[in-house]
Amino acid sequence: MRLTRTRLCSLLVALYCLFSIYAAYHVFFGRRRRPPGATSRNSRKAAAAQAKERRGREQSALESEEWNPWEGEEKNEQRHRVKTNLQILNKSTKEKIEHRVQIWGKAAIGLYLWEHIFEGTLDPADVTAQWREGQSVVGKTHYSFITGPAVVPGYFSIDVDNVVLVLNGREKAKIFHATQWLIYAQNLMQTQKLQHLAVVLLGNEHCENDWIMQFLKRNGGFVDLLFITYDSPWINGADILQWPLGVATYRQFPVVEASWTMLHDERPYICNFLGTIYENSSRQALMNILKQDGNDKLCWVSAREQWQPQETNESLKNYQDALLHSDLTLCPVGVNTECYRIYEACSFGSIPVVEDVMTAGHCGNTTSQHSAPLQLLKAMGAPFIFIKNWKELPAILEKEKTISLQEKIQRRKMLLQWYQHFKTELKWKFTKILESSFFMNNKV
Image 1: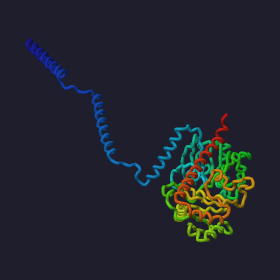
Image 2: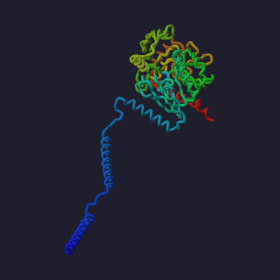
Image 3: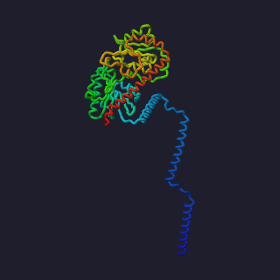
Protein backbone atom coordinates (compact mmCIF):
# COMPACT_ATOMS: atom_id res chain seq x y z
CA MET A 1 0.00 0.00 0.00
CA ARG A 2 2.85 2.33 0.96
CA LEU A 3 4.60 1.41 -2.30
CA THR A 4 1.55 2.33 -4.32
CA ARG A 5 1.35 5.80 -2.76
CA THR A 6 5.04 6.38 -3.46
CA ARG A 7 4.62 5.48 -7.13
CA LEU A 8 1.58 7.74 -7.48
CA CYS A 9 3.43 10.72 -5.96
CA SER A 10 6.43 10.06 -8.20
CA LEU A 11 4.12 9.99 -11.27
CA LEU A 12 2.51 13.28 -10.33
CA VAL A 13 5.92 14.93 -9.79
CA ALA A 14 7.11 13.63 -13.16
CA LEU A 15 4.02 14.99 -14.93
CA TYR A 16 4.49 18.40 -13.25
CA CYS A 17 8.10 18.57 -14.40
CA LEU A 18 7.17 17.66 -17.99
CA PHE A 19 4.48 20.36 -18.06
CA SER A 20 6.92 22.96 -16.66
CA ILE A 21 9.51 22.07 -19.30
CA TYR A 22 6.88 22.30 -22.11
CA ALA A 23 5.66 25.70 -20.88
CA ALA A 24 9.23 27.03 -20.59
CA TYR A 25 10.01 25.90 -24.15
CA HIS A 26 7.07 27.80 -25.65
CA VAL A 27 7.81 30.91 -23.63
CA PHE A 28 11.50 31.17 -24.56
CA PHE A 29 11.79 29.36 -27.90
CA GLY A 30 8.32 29.38 -29.52
CA ARG A 31 7.30 31.82 -32.53
CA ARG A 32 5.96 35.13 -31.19
CA ARG A 33 2.57 36.13 -32.52
CA ARG A 34 1.90 39.80 -33.50
CA PRO A 35 -0.95 41.49 -31.72
CA PRO A 36 -4.07 41.64 -33.89
CA GLY A 37 -4.01 45.47 -33.91
CA ALA A 38 -0.44 45.59 -35.13
CA THR A 39 -1.20 43.16 -37.94
CA SER A 40 -4.11 45.34 -39.10
CA ARG A 41 -2.06 48.56 -38.96
CA ASN A 42 0.82 47.07 -40.90
CA SER A 43 -1.56 45.67 -43.50
CA ARG A 44 -3.10 49.11 -43.99
CA LYS A 45 0.32 50.71 -44.34
CA ALA A 46 1.31 48.16 -46.91
CA ALA A 47 -1.94 48.65 -48.83
CA ALA A 48 -1.52 52.43 -48.73
CA ALA A 49 2.02 52.15 -50.00
CA GLN A 50 0.87 49.92 -52.83
CA ALA A 51 -1.98 52.29 -53.70
CA LYS A 52 0.38 55.28 -53.70
CA GLU A 53 2.76 53.43 -55.96
CA ARG A 54 -0.13 52.50 -58.26
CA ARG A 55 -1.38 56.10 -58.39
CA GLY A 56 2.13 57.22 -59.20
CA ARG A 57 2.27 54.79 -62.09
CA GLU A 58 -1.16 55.94 -63.30
CA GLN A 59 -0.18 59.61 -63.02
CA SER A 60 3.00 58.95 -64.97
CA ALA A 61 0.96 57.19 -67.60
CA LEU A 62 -1.46 60.15 -67.86
CA GLU A 63 1.39 62.64 -68.05
CA SER A 64 3.07 60.61 -70.75
CA GLU A 65 -0.10 60.83 -72.90
CA GLU A 66 -0.99 64.11 -74.64
CA TRP A 67 -4.48 64.42 -73.17
CA ASN A 68 -6.43 67.53 -74.20
CA PRO A 69 -9.49 68.29 -72.04
CA TRP A 70 -10.82 70.83 -74.55
CA GLU A 71 -11.40 68.37 -77.38
CA GLY A 72 -14.92 67.72 -78.56
CA GLU A 73 -17.89 69.69 -79.76
CA GLU A 74 -17.99 71.91 -76.64
CA LYS A 75 -14.41 73.17 -77.07
CA ASN A 76 -15.21 76.81 -77.80
CA GLU A 77 -18.06 77.01 -75.31
CA GLN A 78 -15.94 75.60 -72.49
CA ARG A 79 -13.09 77.98 -73.25
CA HIS A 80 -15.49 80.92 -73.25
CA ARG A 81 -17.01 79.89 -69.94
CA VAL A 82 -13.60 79.43 -68.31
CA LYS A 83 -12.54 82.85 -69.60
CA THR A 84 -15.70 84.43 -68.22
CA ASN A 85 -15.33 82.71 -64.84
CA LEU A 86 -11.70 83.82 -64.60
CA GLN A 87 -12.72 87.40 -65.38
CA ILE A 88 -15.36 87.30 -62.69
CA LEU A 89 -12.88 85.76 -60.24
CA ASN A 90 -10.18 88.34 -61.03
CA LYS A 91 -12.59 91.23 -60.67
CA SER A 92 -14.09 89.89 -57.47
CA THR A 93 -10.66 89.48 -55.88
CA LYS A 94 -9.60 93.01 -56.80
CA GLU A 95 -12.66 94.71 -55.32
CA LYS A 96 -14.90 93.48 -52.58
CA ILE A 97 -18.46 92.89 -53.75
CA GLU A 98 -20.71 95.27 -51.84
CA HIS A 99 -23.90 95.28 -53.90
CA ARG A 100 -26.12 92.76 -55.64
CA VAL A 101 -28.52 93.55 -58.47
CA GLN A 102 -30.71 91.21 -60.51
CA ILE A 103 -31.78 91.99 -64.07
CA TRP A 104 -35.09 90.61 -65.30
CA GLY A 105 -34.93 90.48 -69.10
CA LYS A 106 -38.48 90.66 -70.47
CA ALA A 107 -37.59 92.30 -73.79
CA ALA A 108 -35.07 91.34 -76.46
CA ILE A 109 -33.14 94.53 -75.77
CA GLY A 110 -32.13 92.88 -72.48
CA LEU A 111 -29.94 90.46 -74.44
CA TYR A 112 -28.09 93.41 -75.97
CA LEU A 113 -27.52 94.75 -72.47
CA TRP A 114 -26.29 91.41 -71.11
CA GLU A 115 -24.44 89.71 -73.96
CA HIS A 116 -23.10 92.72 -75.88
CA ILE A 117 -22.59 95.47 -73.28
CA PHE A 118 -21.88 93.36 -70.20
CA GLU A 119 -20.24 90.61 -72.30
CA GLY A 120 -22.02 88.08 -70.12
CA THR A 121 -22.91 84.49 -71.00
CA LEU A 122 -26.18 82.66 -70.49
CA ASP A 123 -26.83 79.10 -69.38
CA PRO A 124 -28.13 77.25 -71.27
CA ALA A 125 -26.84 78.67 -74.54
CA ASP A 126 -29.98 77.51 -76.35
CA VAL A 127 -31.94 80.65 -77.27
CA THR A 128 -35.22 78.69 -77.18
CA ALA A 129 -34.76 77.57 -73.56
CA GLN A 130 -37.57 78.43 -71.14
CA TRP A 131 -35.20 79.77 -68.48
CA ARG A 132 -31.73 81.25 -68.98
CA GLU A 133 -29.45 82.87 -66.46
CA GLY A 134 -25.99 84.36 -66.04
CA GLN A 135 -23.74 86.24 -63.63
CA SER A 136 -21.22 89.05 -63.94
CA VAL A 137 -19.28 91.43 -61.71
CA VAL A 138 -18.71 95.09 -62.51
CA GLY A 139 -16.68 96.99 -59.93
CA LYS A 140 -18.27 96.33 -56.55
CA THR A 141 -21.59 95.17 -57.94
CA HIS A 142 -22.54 91.57 -58.62
CA TYR A 143 -25.16 91.19 -61.35
CA SER A 144 -27.36 88.20 -62.01
CA PHE A 145 -29.52 87.99 -65.12
CA ILE A 146 -32.61 85.89 -65.81
CA THR A 147 -34.70 85.71 -68.98
CA GLY A 148 -36.98 83.41 -70.94
CA PRO A 149 -40.69 82.52 -71.14
CA ALA A 150 -40.56 80.83 -67.73
CA VAL A 151 -39.74 84.14 -66.04
CA VAL A 152 -43.32 84.98 -65.10
CA PRO A 153 -44.59 87.26 -62.30
CA GLY A 154 -45.10 85.27 -59.11
CA TYR A 155 -43.54 82.07 -60.44
CA PHE A 156 -39.90 82.52 -59.45
CA SER A 157 -38.19 83.20 -56.13
CA ILE A 158 -37.10 86.72 -55.20
CA ASP A 159 -33.77 86.65 -53.37
CA VAL A 160 -32.50 90.16 -54.08
CA ASP A 161 -33.47 93.64 -52.93
CA ASN A 162 -32.52 95.54 -56.09
CA VAL A 163 -33.83 94.86 -59.58
CA VAL A 164 -33.45 96.18 -63.11
CA LEU A 165 -36.53 95.35 -65.17
CA VAL A 166 -36.11 95.29 -68.98
CA LEU A 167 -39.41 95.94 -70.77
CA ASN A 168 -40.84 96.46 -74.26
CA GLY A 169 -43.13 99.50 -74.56
CA ARG A 170 -43.10 99.92 -78.32
CA GLU A 171 -46.78 99.11 -79.00
CA LYS A 172 -50.08 98.62 -77.15
CA ALA A 173 -49.86 94.85 -76.69
CA LYS A 174 -46.31 95.17 -75.32
CA ILE A 175 -47.34 98.03 -73.05
CA PHE A 176 -50.05 95.86 -71.49
CA HIS A 177 -47.53 93.15 -70.53
CA ALA A 178 -45.02 95.75 -69.36
CA THR A 179 -47.68 97.30 -67.12
CA GLN A 180 -48.42 93.91 -65.55
CA TRP A 181 -44.74 93.54 -64.67
CA LEU A 182 -44.64 97.00 -63.13
CA ILE A 183 -47.73 96.27 -61.02
CA TYR A 184 -46.07 93.05 -59.85
CA ALA A 185 -42.91 94.98 -58.94
CA GLN A 186 -45.03 97.56 -57.10
CA ASN A 187 -46.56 94.81 -54.95
CA LEU A 188 -43.06 93.54 -54.13
CA MET A 189 -42.03 97.04 -53.10
CA GLN A 190 -45.12 97.46 -50.91
CA THR A 191 -44.43 94.15 -49.14
CA GLN A 192 -40.76 95.18 -48.72
CA LYS A 193 -39.49 92.30 -50.84
CA LEU A 194 -37.77 94.84 -53.08
CA GLN A 195 -36.08 98.09 -52.15
CA HIS A 196 -35.07 99.61 -55.48
CA LEU A 197 -36.19 99.27 -59.09
CA ALA A 198 -34.81 100.62 -62.37
CA VAL A 199 -36.38 100.10 -65.79
CA VAL A 200 -34.67 99.71 -69.16
CA LEU A 201 -37.39 100.45 -71.70
CA LEU A 202 -37.56 99.78 -75.42
CA GLY A 203 -39.61 102.88 -76.06
CA ASN A 204 -42.04 103.85 -78.77
CA GLU A 205 -40.40 104.94 -82.04
CA HIS A 206 -42.37 108.20 -81.93
CA CYS A 207 -41.32 108.69 -78.28
CA GLU A 208 -44.92 108.37 -77.12
CA ASN A 209 -44.26 106.83 -73.70
CA ASP A 210 -46.63 108.72 -71.41
CA TRP A 211 -48.02 105.47 -69.97
CA ILE A 212 -44.92 104.90 -67.83
CA MET A 213 -44.76 108.36 -66.25
CA GLN A 214 -47.12 107.40 -63.39
CA PHE A 215 -44.66 104.73 -62.23
CA LEU A 216 -41.66 107.05 -61.87
CA LYS A 217 -40.67 108.03 -58.35
CA ARG A 218 -40.57 111.71 -59.36
CA ASN A 219 -44.34 111.41 -60.00
CA GLY A 220 -45.14 109.56 -56.78
CA GLY A 221 -44.33 106.12 -58.16
CA PHE A 222 -41.60 103.64 -57.26
CA VAL A 223 -39.24 103.44 -60.27
CA ASP A 224 -35.93 105.04 -59.26
CA LEU A 225 -34.36 105.19 -62.74
CA LEU A 226 -35.56 104.97 -66.33
CA PHE A 227 -33.18 104.07 -69.17
CA ILE A 228 -35.06 104.66 -72.42
CA THR A 229 -34.30 104.18 -76.12
CA TYR A 230 -34.53 106.89 -78.78
CA ASP A 231 -34.15 110.63 -78.32
CA SER A 232 -36.86 111.16 -75.74
CA PRO A 233 -37.38 114.80 -74.70
CA TRP A 234 -37.59 113.54 -71.11
CA ILE A 235 -33.90 112.67 -70.92
CA ASN A 236 -32.32 114.73 -68.13
CA GLY A 237 -29.13 112.86 -67.20
CA ALA A 238 -30.43 112.34 -63.64
CA ASP A 239 -33.28 109.82 -63.32
CA ILE A 240 -34.14 109.49 -67.04
CA LEU A 241 -31.26 108.47 -69.29
CA GLN A 242 -30.89 107.47 -72.91
CA TRP A 243 -30.17 103.83 -73.75
CA PRO A 244 -28.96 102.54 -77.14
CA LEU A 245 -31.23 100.53 -79.39
CA GLY A 246 -28.41 98.07 -80.09
CA VAL A 247 -28.52 95.13 -82.48
CA ALA A 248 -31.61 93.09 -83.38
CA THR A 249 -31.18 90.29 -80.86
CA TYR A 250 -34.79 89.26 -81.52
CA ARG A 251 -33.55 88.26 -84.98
CA GLN A 252 -30.67 86.32 -83.43
CA PHE A 253 -27.99 88.83 -84.44
CA PRO A 254 -24.89 87.45 -82.70
CA VAL A 255 -22.00 88.82 -80.67
CA VAL A 256 -19.34 89.33 -83.34
CA GLU A 257 -15.67 88.73 -82.58
CA ALA A 258 -13.25 90.82 -84.65
CA SER A 259 -10.88 88.78 -86.82
CA TRP A 260 -7.74 89.42 -88.84
CA THR A 261 -9.64 89.05 -92.13
CA MET A 262 -12.35 91.44 -90.94
CA LEU A 263 -9.69 94.09 -90.44
CA HIS A 264 -7.26 93.48 -93.29
CA ASP A 265 -9.07 91.92 -96.25
CA GLU A 266 -10.07 93.94 -99.27
CA ARG A 267 -13.86 94.23 -99.29
CA PRO A 268 -15.49 93.68 -102.70
CA TYR A 269 -18.34 96.17 -102.15
CA ILE A 270 -18.15 99.88 -101.43
CA CYS A 271 -21.48 99.89 -99.63
CA ASN A 272 -24.55 97.84 -98.78
CA PHE A 273 -28.23 98.25 -98.10
CA LEU A 274 -30.55 95.35 -97.31
CA GLY A 275 -33.91 96.47 -96.06
CA THR A 276 -37.53 97.45 -96.55
CA ILE A 277 -38.47 100.26 -98.93
CA TYR A 278 -41.37 102.26 -97.50
CA GLU A 279 -43.58 104.18 -99.89
CA ASN A 280 -42.86 107.91 -100.14
CA SER A 281 -39.81 107.57 -97.87
CA SER A 282 -36.21 108.69 -98.22
CA ARG A 283 -35.39 105.05 -98.87
CA GLN A 284 -37.04 105.34 -102.26
CA ALA A 285 -34.83 108.35 -102.99
CA LEU A 286 -31.81 106.32 -101.88
CA MET A 287 -32.66 103.49 -104.27
CA ASN A 288 -33.04 105.91 -107.16
CA ILE A 289 -29.65 107.47 -106.44
CA LEU A 290 -27.98 104.05 -106.21
CA LYS A 291 -29.28 103.22 -109.67
CA GLN A 292 -27.63 106.32 -111.12
CA ASP A 293 -24.24 105.96 -112.83
CA GLY A 294 -24.18 102.24 -112.01
CA ASN A 295 -23.64 102.80 -108.28
CA ASP A 296 -25.89 99.85 -107.50
CA LYS A 297 -23.24 97.60 -109.08
CA LEU A 298 -20.67 98.86 -106.58
CA CYS A 299 -22.90 98.07 -103.61
CA TRP A 300 -24.65 95.01 -102.23
CA VAL A 301 -28.31 96.02 -102.51
CA SER A 302 -31.34 93.88 -101.67
CA ALA A 303 -34.67 95.64 -101.21
CA ARG A 304 -38.06 94.33 -100.15
CA GLU A 305 -41.46 95.99 -100.00
CA GLN A 306 -42.72 94.55 -96.70
CA TRP A 307 -40.97 94.48 -93.33
CA GLN A 308 -40.26 91.01 -91.98
CA PRO A 309 -39.88 90.61 -88.20
CA GLN A 310 -37.92 87.37 -88.40
CA GLU A 311 -34.94 86.27 -90.44
CA THR A 312 -34.31 82.87 -91.98
CA ASN A 313 -30.89 81.33 -91.52
CA GLU A 314 -30.14 82.17 -95.13
CA SER A 315 -31.28 85.80 -94.95
CA LEU A 316 -29.36 86.36 -91.72
CA LYS A 317 -26.19 84.95 -93.28
CA ASN A 318 -26.65 87.10 -96.39
CA TYR A 319 -27.08 90.19 -94.23
CA GLN A 320 -23.97 89.47 -92.18
CA ASP A 321 -21.98 88.74 -95.34
CA ALA A 322 -23.08 92.08 -96.76
CA LEU A 323 -21.83 93.88 -93.65
CA LEU A 324 -18.56 91.96 -93.65
CA HIS A 325 -17.84 92.55 -97.35
CA SER A 326 -18.77 96.25 -97.54
CA ASP A 327 -16.73 99.29 -96.53
CA LEU A 328 -19.86 101.36 -95.86
CA THR A 329 -23.35 100.50 -94.60
CA LEU A 330 -26.14 102.84 -95.67
CA CYS A 331 -28.51 103.67 -92.80
CA PRO A 332 -31.57 105.57 -94.01
CA VAL A 333 -34.20 106.59 -91.47
CA GLY A 334 -37.17 104.34 -90.85
CA VAL A 335 -39.92 105.13 -88.38
CA ASN A 336 -37.08 106.57 -86.26
CA THR A 337 -33.60 107.84 -87.14
CA GLU A 338 -31.96 105.28 -84.86
CA CYS A 339 -31.98 101.74 -86.23
CA TYR A 340 -30.44 98.36 -85.48
CA ARG A 341 -28.40 98.56 -88.68
CA ILE A 342 -26.15 101.26 -87.20
CA TYR A 343 -24.93 99.00 -84.39
CA GLU A 344 -24.80 95.89 -86.58
CA ALA A 345 -22.54 97.69 -89.05
CA CYS A 346 -20.23 98.65 -86.19
CA SER A 347 -19.98 94.99 -85.19
CA PHE A 348 -18.44 94.17 -88.58
CA GLY A 349 -16.28 97.27 -88.98
CA SER A 350 -18.44 98.69 -91.78
CA ILE A 351 -18.75 102.48 -91.47
CA PRO A 352 -22.40 103.57 -91.01
CA VAL A 353 -23.55 106.29 -93.40
CA VAL A 354 -26.39 107.76 -91.34
CA GLU A 355 -29.24 109.92 -92.55
CA ASP A 356 -29.08 112.59 -89.86
CA VAL A 357 -32.63 113.95 -89.88
CA MET A 358 -35.47 113.99 -87.37
CA THR A 359 -38.46 111.74 -87.97
CA ALA A 360 -42.12 112.44 -87.22
CA GLY A 361 -43.26 112.17 -83.63
CA HIS A 362 -42.24 113.58 -80.27
CA CYS A 363 -38.57 112.56 -80.22
CA GLY A 364 -35.94 115.22 -79.62
CA ASN A 365 -36.24 118.91 -80.19
CA THR A 366 -33.81 120.30 -82.73
CA THR A 367 -34.41 123.87 -81.55
CA SER A 368 -33.19 123.20 -78.01
CA GLN A 369 -31.04 120.09 -78.51
CA HIS A 370 -28.47 120.82 -81.17
CA SER A 371 -27.22 117.22 -81.35
CA ALA A 372 -30.63 115.61 -81.87
CA PRO A 373 -31.20 113.09 -83.33
CA LEU A 374 -28.86 110.32 -82.11
CA GLN A 375 -27.82 112.32 -79.06
CA LEU A 376 -26.13 109.42 -77.28
CA LEU A 377 -24.04 108.31 -80.27
CA LYS A 378 -22.90 111.84 -81.04
CA ALA A 379 -22.05 112.54 -77.41
CA MET A 380 -19.84 109.44 -77.46
CA GLY A 381 -18.03 110.64 -80.59
CA ALA A 382 -19.31 108.04 -83.05
CA PRO A 383 -16.98 107.95 -86.12
CA PHE A 384 -19.81 107.75 -88.63
CA ILE A 385 -20.55 109.58 -91.87
CA PHE A 386 -23.58 111.81 -91.22
CA ILE A 387 -25.55 113.20 -94.16
CA LYS A 388 -28.70 115.30 -94.42
CA ASN A 389 -29.74 114.17 -97.89
CA TRP A 390 -28.98 111.09 -99.96
CA LYS A 391 -27.97 113.38 -102.81
CA GLU A 392 -24.65 113.58 -100.95
CA LEU A 393 -24.06 109.87 -101.49
CA PRO A 394 -22.53 109.90 -105.02
CA ALA A 395 -19.69 112.15 -103.85
CA ILE A 396 -19.07 109.87 -100.88
CA LEU A 397 -18.90 106.82 -103.13
CA GLU A 398 -16.48 108.58 -105.50
CA LYS A 399 -14.23 109.45 -102.56
CA GLU A 400 -14.29 105.83 -101.41
CA LYS A 401 -12.75 104.76 -104.70
CA THR A 402 -9.65 106.83 -103.92
CA ILE A 403 -9.05 105.52 -100.40
CA SER A 404 -6.25 102.96 -100.10
CA LEU A 405 -6.61 99.61 -98.35
CA GLN A 406 -4.26 100.74 -95.55
CA GLU A 407 -6.43 103.76 -94.89
CA LYS A 408 -9.51 101.56 -94.80
CA ILE A 409 -7.82 99.18 -92.38
CA GLN A 410 -7.04 102.04 -90.01
CA ARG A 411 -10.61 103.29 -90.30
CA ARG A 412 -11.99 99.83 -89.48
CA LYS A 413 -9.72 99.58 -86.45
CA MET A 414 -10.89 102.97 -85.26
CA LEU A 415 -14.55 102.01 -85.65
CA LEU A 416 -14.18 98.65 -83.89
CA GLN A 417 -12.17 100.23 -81.06
CA TRP A 418 -14.71 103.01 -80.69
CA TYR A 419 -17.61 100.52 -80.57
CA GLN A 420 -15.90 98.44 -77.91
CA HIS A 421 -15.17 101.59 -75.91
CA PHE A 422 -18.79 102.70 -76.36
CA LYS A 423 -20.12 99.46 -74.84
CA THR A 424 -17.57 99.43 -72.03
CA GLU A 425 -18.37 103.04 -71.11
CA LEU A 426 -22.08 102.23 -71.05
CA LYS A 427 -21.49 99.29 -68.73
CA TRP A 428 -19.55 101.37 -66.22
CA LYS A 429 -21.87 104.39 -66.43
CA PHE A 430 -24.87 102.13 -65.98
CA THR A 431 -23.28 100.59 -62.88
CA LYS A 432 -22.18 103.95 -61.46
CA ILE A 433 -25.67 105.42 -61.85
CA LEU A 434 -27.28 102.36 -60.25
CA GLU A 435 -24.87 102.39 -57.32
CA SER A 436 -25.42 106.11 -56.79
CA SER A 437 -29.21 105.86 -56.94
CA PHE A 438 -29.74 102.53 -55.17
CA PHE A 439 -27.03 102.49 -52.52
CA MET A 440 -25.44 105.87 -51.89
CA ASN A 441 -28.74 107.39 -50.77
CA ASN A 442 -29.03 104.65 -48.12
CA LYS A 443 -25.83 105.70 -46.42
CA VAL A 444 -26.10 108.02 -43.47
